[in-house]
Image 1: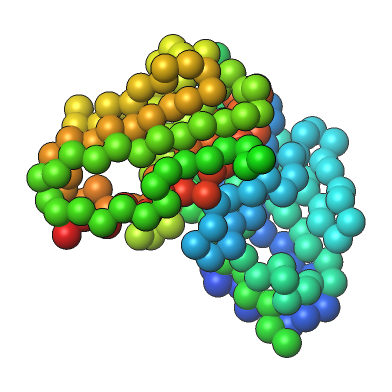
Image 2: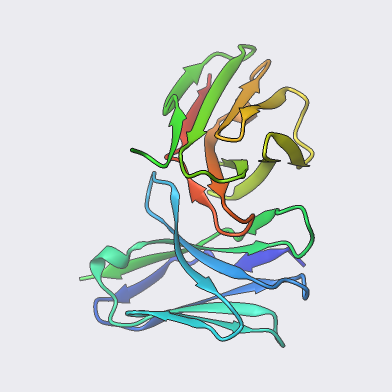
Length: 111
Length: 111
């Protein structure tokens, strides 16, 4: 099993739709998780952190399912500007501060 | 007042040449990273430094040599460039080894 795995998509959704992505991780000892957004030909930018109680920021909700070892990102009322690739990131639980990224899920919001 | 800055942003060179990429962060973070993003957009960790000390080396060929003169700078030197080295190289810094702040990337093309 890959350390961090995502469905590459693309997810093509109409404006206003709700869309959700999952990201599975293999290390059950992982404690913190992050979602990043990467626009075409740009750097990844931190979107949200995901802790055990989940996290909500406006139209974005991130949740953690420890039992099944996945995190999710829910986007409500999709905007055209949400079109991007969404990467999940999982720092390792040891002391070496290694952050592993998934391959990303591409979202295209259609007018 | 860019937080993480990399130079150059674009680099086109011939196989066999040697090139360097420089990175500087003004966020006061202790940890800095080099990531490689290939044509399939997979973001893979290469190196990490914590306060000038190498802490992660992800089985990168010896042709790649990072150097951190101080905790605000992390450079990457690549010897004997190969076609497969063509990618976008991202520098990142972190206050905690968990959330990352990326530079804009250096797009390397080897001909």
